[in-house]
Image (cartoon, rainbow, N blue to C red; front, side, top):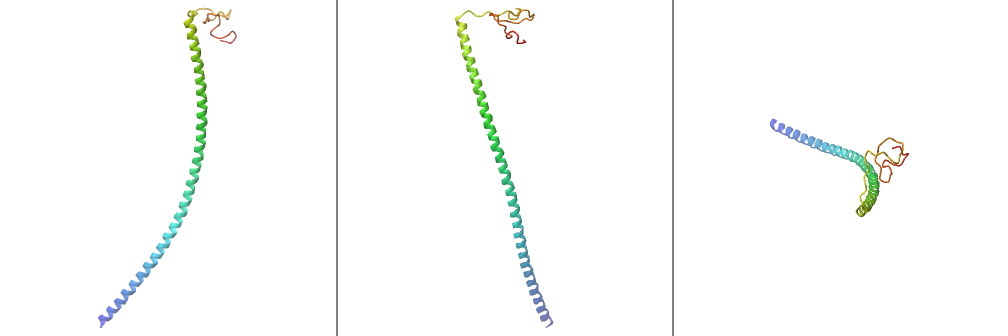
Length: 146
């Protein structure tokens, strides 16, 4: 009988412990769910802030990229214009060379002035320079300071 009474007491104790453990587990699950939901909401808010910051940064980069693209386009246009000028200059030089070659082929070659010859277009100036056979100074017209 004493054993039966002890067995009955232990069974009740076991059932009470199981019920307490199950109740504690249910509370723990509920608390854990609430903590997870709160953490998820906080994480969601944080990610919304981060995403907005990234959107803002991307907009800024896009604006700067557009501005840079415009600058590159203007630079490309300027370079294109400058190359067009150079092309026109080379075209004129080619025309002049063709005329010079034609003139040279049809007449006697021009005589080159001597290096030691005194400049004829600047009388009274002691420097020595090379003058063209026509008498024009290769250093420039008189009074240019050369």
